[in-house]
Image 1 (cartoon, one colour):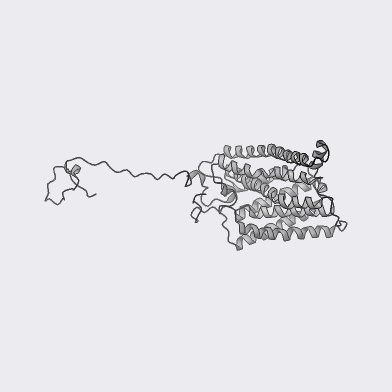
Image 2 (image 1 turned 45 degrees about the horizontal axis):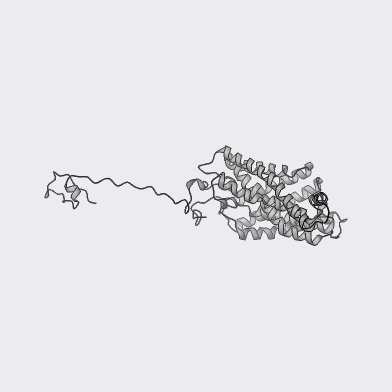
Length: 352
């Protein structure tokens, strides 16, 4: 709209007569206000749902709404839910198995299942651990008000091609290291345990879910929550690894160091590659090879009861973890994966 004078201005003195009757009558129109854009809650991200641009994976839950006590509360709440639900889910699965088969009295059946003398025990344990996945997703949404796909990588979301390559690399490493360990101990011989076929089916179907659940919670949610609480990536890696090792119960020092080393290496790898894929792959193959070989040579119940390793055994397994981490890191560099949050990348701020 062209600028105009008041009622006292006369035509012919360099000013044009306004076409607005209200202006000619001396009434000034109201000033237009610039409306602030408001994103529809169902279609766009809220500012608090996005991490800081350039943040590494361990800080992906840190946003303008982050306060340290909320992150700590989420971590404690998650661990409490896990300890409660894993028992409830595992007991429910065993109870259903007993009702369907009813081979012996329930107390005997439950004790055998708990010791992994029956396939249902391994299935029940893995099903209980699997609850870590919905727990992690719920905590990200409710406690941190963030989108759940930041839990998997800084892309965001799961990078499936990289996961598949990491599964192949991990298979070669862990099968190879198992072969080396057996050559060092030639006493082992192939003698499949009773019900090996059922045990193997349970291992192949449920162990990948169990391993992924542990990675999503410990290297995913717990590392992000603790790292974001203090804005220090290393703190999330170290703290979550300590909790992971301690949660495995009774163990000698060599076995504790073994599990702590796995947690630290997996956490460092997640930080460096910007996602959970390599850690999930290594955890899945480690468990499948360990349980599969135990079922072929001794028993899965025997592996379940292990509470000690020698330092030589622990060191050899740690070497396998280091080799696997190094190879998957090289793969990530060759694939040029995004390792930090990039809010300007295509699709990052689109609706989930």
